[in-house]
Each structure stands twice: as structure tokens, then as C-alpha cells.
Amino acid sequence: MQAKTILVVDDEDGVRESLREVLSDEGYRVLDTADGTRALELIRQEKPSLVLLDIWMPHIDGIGLLKEIKSQEPQTNVVMVSGHGNIHTAVTATKFGAFDFIEKPVSLDGLLLTVQRALGELSVPQAKKVNGNGSKRRKTARTGAAAAKNGAAGQPIRQKTLKKSVVISGQGLHSGIKTGLILHPLPPNSGILFTGISGDVTIPAHLDYVGSTGYATSLRTRGFAVGTVEHFLAVLHSYGITNLLVKIQGEIPILDGSAVEFCHLIEEAGVHEEEQEWAEIVVDRPYRVGIEAGEFISIEPAERFSVRYVLKYPKPVGLQEHSYFFKGPDFFKAEIAPARTFGFLKDIEKLQSMGLVSGGKVNNCILIDDKKIINTDLRFPDELARHKILDILGDFYLLGKPIRGAVTAHMTGHSDNIALLRELRSGMNL
Image 1 (cartoon, rainbow, N blue to C red):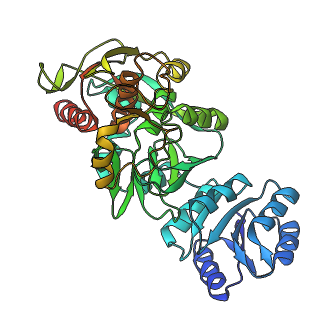
Image 2 (image 1 turned 90 degrees about the vertical axis):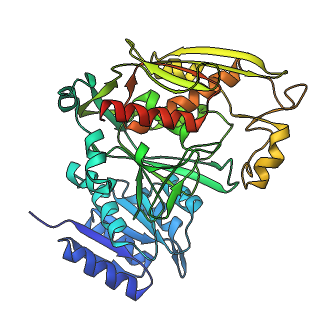
Image 3 (image 1 turned 180 degrees about the horizontal axis):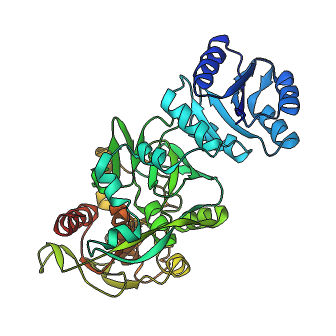
């Protein structure tokens, strides 16, 4: 079979030589040039399967050259490469048609994985290798038929990914940094994977990688962390997305404090149903964390997934209660996704002293003082309880599969959600 051609466009001789050597060793035919005009000629003549394009070159703008390539040869995949990139540069490049964006100095593992994805060569065994979690992660990624053997699975369900890559920008609630997401489809049995711009370290969206649960859920491994994942994961959970690569810089953007824009993002990309199956986890008996008279969360067997949440704060909040039964993504989008995060004015100074809520704004958080909600009108009378359900939906996707059972929670938060998941995993030997 004829080797696939990759064109490297970079003004640094050493970079071109290194990439040529690495990619040639992998069996690809490699062309290279430092000239943008020559790059366009080579693309027309050689029809490369992939172009690796430096974003910063003398006398030419890499983004401008990207636009020209996509205009003349729209089917040609282009991966942008830069030593001065950040998530915003990556988002911009993706919006203009780049398949992906990687950083210099180029990580060998990250480069090869990106090339394999761009060329459609990322097989299921390779996708599992990306997870980097050995047998534990593979256990949670079993197909529906295999999982059903131990009585812990329901009816097989088709795995899903996105039809195309999409991007979104925003600001982190706790870090305050400008951030964004780039979502890429992945093959079956890959799972939900978070990675940085370089792509060399990935974190599976899985209980094994929970780093902290104070005021938000974060994931961490090998010096790489992703914060405030719960709203985004709630959307993936509700839309049934099982395989996805998520490029992120530090923290998931808070947007308006709800999950509605993430719903729009998934719908913009479109949901692709894959051939392979998996199955939900069917709760076998009651599990509980906390005490009945105070803060507690429990789950028990049921015919479908549901969450009942009760919260009680002093006025002006008072008692709020909401029950949610999963009826598909449209119902989630209408009833739970619009519910925004909330905070009490008296707690803001404490949170700021802890280095949190640096990105909190009047338009992305419900602020409450001793007398009233001070910055907005509620979207639902029980919006705070609905937002707590949103958090539970996100955290409960960290076992890697949907769960069939009835959840009841009273005044709980992320730490309680994660504690119950650990009890469930231990009790069911997941």
C-alpha cells in the first residue's frame, strides 16, 4: 500500500528535520518547505493527506495560509503547530478549519496521536492506550454484552461521539483565566478524554482521576489538571456521548453559569451513533453516604435514572425541592441545563481568599445576600435545586457509563457525590 504523504511547513530547519525523521520512521512519505507559496504549490501537486503548518513564520501568517489552503483544497487536513500558542490561538485555528493544534516543543506521543487521528488511523487499541489507566479504565469501557455477564448492566446501548470538531471560548469560574474547549470525535471504547494543547497527557473523565471536589469537581494526573468539569459532563451524560477528546487549558469555561451553551455546542457538532455497544450500570441495592437527618445522598434500584434534590437555606432561599426523571436530551436541555450556579455574598470574600471565584461575574452566577437575590431573576422557582441536580448528573458520569437508579440528595455537594460513587463502585465491584 502506498505511504500517505505529510507536508511539513515550518521556517525552522531543525523542526522540519525532526518531524521528517520521526514521521518517516512511522512509514509516512514526508515533504517539507519553509515557504508558504511553495506550500500551496506542493499541496496542489502532491495532494498530501495532511499538512503540519507552523502558525508563526516570517513574511506569512499561518492563519492566513490556513484559510488559503482550506479555500483551495478544502478536503486537506491541516494541523497547526506553534511555540507561542494558547487555547485561544487553538480555538481560532480550529474555527478556520484546522483539524487540530499542537505546541512546540512537539511531544512525540502527542504528535503521533494527532497525526493518527487526522489520518483516521486511531484504532480502538490505540484509543485505549491514550487513556493511560491500564486495566481499571478498560474495565469500565466494556461493551454492553461483556458487562451484562456480571449482572451489572442493562440493555446494550450504542456508543456515540460527535460528527465533527467544534469549539467554544469563555472564562474559568474559579481560576478567572480565559479558556476554551476544542471537541474532537473519537472511535468506540475511547471514553471521554481531556488533554492540553500539546496532547501528550490525557485525563479520562473517570472517578480514578478526581483531584478535588471543593466547590467544583476537578480531574488530575501527571501534573495536568482540568477544573470545573461537572456542567460539561452533565451534558455529555444527557446526550449519551461516550467517546470524545476535549482540548482544554486549565478549567472548563463557566459561560452563563448553566449548561445550555454546552447543549448548543453538542447540537452544532451533531451526534454520531457508532457501531459498538455499551450498557448502563444497573444499581443492585441501596447505597447511602451521610446521615438521614442531615446531609446525605443515596441511590437505590429503579426502572430508570432519576434525581430528587432537597435544599433548605435561610431566607431569601428557603426550601427548594425538585425531582428529575431522565427523558432524553431535549428534556434535560429544557428542565435542568438552564439552571445556573449560585453563591452567597457572605461567602465570596472567603472563596476569594482561597483563590477561587476569580471569574465570578454578575452574569454567570446567582448572587444571594441576606435579603434577596441581588443580580438576576430566577429562571425557575427552584433553580438552585435544579442546579444541584445538574452537578449530580455531571459527577455521576465519572464511572464512565450511565447509571440506572433513583438518587435522593439533601444538602449535598461534589464531595458527597464522589463518595457515593466510590461506595457504588466498591459494592458492585465495578
